Image: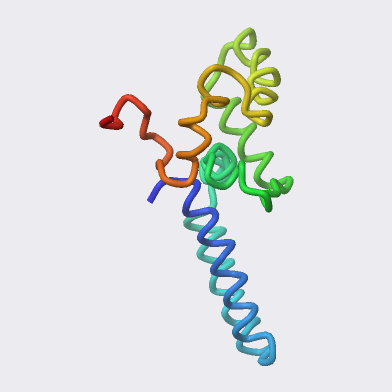
Length: 129
């Protein structure tokens, strides 16, 4: 499962558990404890947060919110993957372009209409027209 989808799936699972067991606090606490332990010790990594943030399906959704944990994970990945300070200096400008969906690729109609159908990692070259 691509990284960003796992992060979003865990958020959805937590919301479902809370709705299902909101009247039974003891079960809710027990289930949340199990989920949190698994998430914290086995699944939660900065790469998951970065994948979530950089997944156009989620990022460009009307209800997208990046909390501090997501932003921290994103920048942790950027720092690890881009060791050169000169290249890191370009990141804020590129992030602004991503946020505003600017540039030849991000602003194209094809990219905008395929945000919900293409998985991250797939590129437009692989689309058969």
